[in-house]
Amino acid sequence: MIYFFYITFYISIFHKCCGVTVEKAGPASVESTNPTVAEKQAFLQLFGNGDPDEAASCGQLIESRGFQYERYYVTTEDGYILQNFRIINPYAREARNTLKPVLLVHPILASCASWLFNSPASLGFLLANLGYDVWLINARGTSYSTNHTHLDPEGNSFYPVFWDYSFYEIGIYDVTSTVEHIKNETGFEKITVVAYSQGSIQMITQMSLMPWFQDNYDIVILAAPAGFVGEYGFFASIPNKPAQEFFSSSNGPYPSNSAFFYSSLSALCVNQLASPICVTFFGNLGFDRNQFNASRLSVYISLRDRSSKKNLLHIFQSVERDHLSFFDYGEVKNYALYGSAEPPEFPYYNINPNKLIFMSGLNDQVIDQRNVQKFRNSLCDRVDTDHIIQDPYWKHSFLAANEAYAYFGSVVADLIRERGDSTECRLNLSGN
Image 1 (spheres, rainbow, N blue to C red):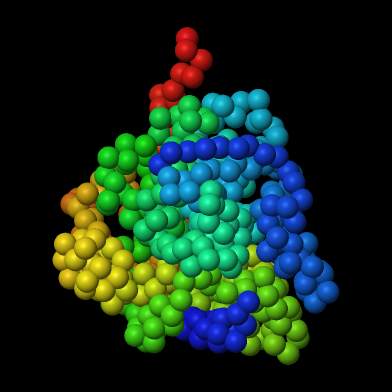
Image 2 (image 1 turned 90 degrees about the vertical axis):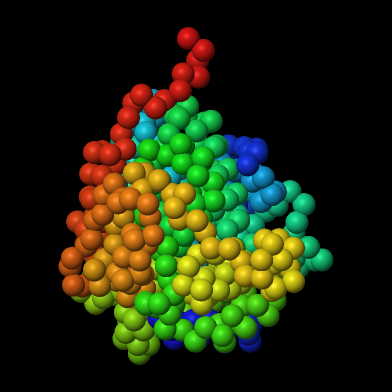
């Protein structure tokens, strides 16, 4: 996985290129809702392998599986406009106001597509088929959520300011605004959240810094819970100082031109000579050959997305400190913001472990089990459920694995049914 970061470093260098306001929308053209996806599709029509899922938008993926969707624009307290999706099961449309809401929070360098591309094991479709009201967030800076009430992400004087965010802002503002919107839209007092990898970082951030907000959740399922990322695992294997120097060079998106980067890499890996190299390379990213469908590699790559350099920088700062912490701005600004030379660590003791369900892999090379154990030990009590996937071939590929249904999706569905379902949590919006 370290080589993946090196490659993207070089391409990025040489190819520069909780109030809520809601607008509900139905299907629209990809060009109008996500120009980056449209660019990818145009490129891969010429150089891809013809798989209809290559660079597909979330709306296209949803409709191609026989579902419908609604798109909601949610404005965060600090002005970012998120384009979120809601999966509509056409067979349950009339009853959807009674369906329990479940929010899926995607990992880093990804989007809502993370929960949709691995049919029939995709968690989004699995839960929608089982009678849940499935919502998909797209964090700020992804190709779906690049609008703001007054900042422009495309290169004028506000460009560095738009990209001046990390997982802290995503957890505090994006997740919070989305949850409040879902509650207002559905009338449920409490919702269920499933968060994967960096999605778990965002939930940990919010739950530790906004402990009162945990009342909005019945359960929070953290897949690959990343409370600690510093001592073991993938991020600890990357030279930390060079990574921090690279990501601190300027504010901006990463990769700098995601449409060019992902579509060209996807096309490259379709090539018969390059394909074995790509399979080996991505196998080092936590995809074991026994759990990896190599014929879908171009699809997986084409559906990756972007984040901010500051977000990656904040992760490597947390690696150095071996604890999720506030962003380190340097001693002078830290004193002004935090009253101390070093940024404070997030107070994990604020997290209610009775709300938490851990799902981790015994052999996950990215979120190492030893780091997961440190997170367990940092909480004030045992989590509600602690599920460890024992299969030796199961690593970090929770969403793309061949057996994602057996080891992840079906377990999540059972946990939600057993721990999270409650018809008593729905508000009466009719006034009767």
